[in-house]
Image 1 (cartoon, rainbow, N blue to C red):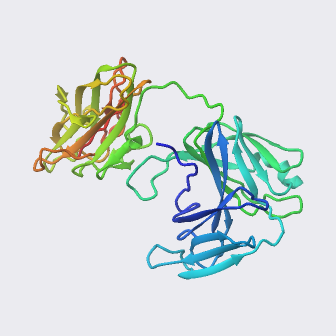
Image 2 (image 1 turned 90 degrees about the horizontal axis):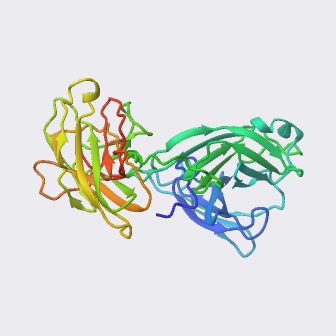
Image 3 (image 1 turned 45 degrees about the vertical axis):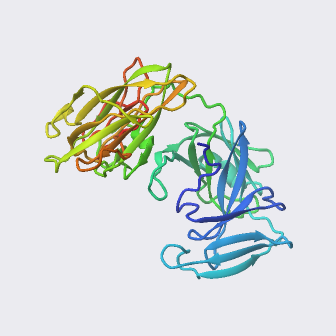
Length: 428
């Protein structure tokens, strides 16, 4: 799946964005403006190409319009024509009219604002419309706060931030014309959104305060990035969740940033795409949490490889009520055949019956290069038809050291040291 050129974090810079328009003249020529029905105002997007891939940054541009923005046009006179709309409930900008039509005319004056943010091997280059003041330059090393996070596909509206962390600015230099600041930033990772903020006071040479203090950069590519050694782990919270499975973190002891919960839903599923070194039979390990105790009934968890259910083979069940390492619940193993390298996907399915699993489960998977595979597990109730539905899996697990097999694991209130290889697992 091609990553988006621009992430727009919900309720931070957008909620219901409307059509983009290209600016062909002025300070922000070749950039785009877009409105928002619910968030309101106009936002601006600067796009860049990094190592052949498009990515960019979003800024606030103007606010204070009379209604949420549904349509924006650049007229033949160069003015912006903004159409507003609103509706009951949350389909409108709070406190504004339900309709509006406004004309925004450039007045020829320059506003002190960020023109662009571009990613570099060392960090970021931030360019401004006006030269920075002496006071701002003197404190430039402490003038920025950065955070990064990423997103994973979920059924939740907006989606949660994953792996959210602060980034340290270790250096900052100002260009000779005082319009560009080059930041050295440690810890950036591809596939993340970087939020940059310059707390006031941040002024231009004429004393004008910075118009917009924040920027949201989509870092699909980080130049010069060297990935850490591949441990072959896949986390359930990063997998594709369907059928009521959700990312959760209400119990401790999970690896990664959370676990896949919601396994009480019949049809909840977690799906991993796995890669292995070579074609052949691969072991698959699944771990998930039992709970609550006493359980209201039994649950069947299925494991599928490329859509075909497989026999989970020997399994080891633990009493969910016992303490210590036993508590994580049931462990199941299976063997799945991986296709030749020319085949790109493979799904592994394991089925087991156990007491109802709690939502606090984590799944991870182990990867190896070249041959891709897909594994999934589904949950079904005893009264359901023989067919299976996709379900979500636990938080983390680790396969054997010799192979990159699909695996899923879950934990319920107890730390789990295992992580899973790429596979899809489901439970209730």
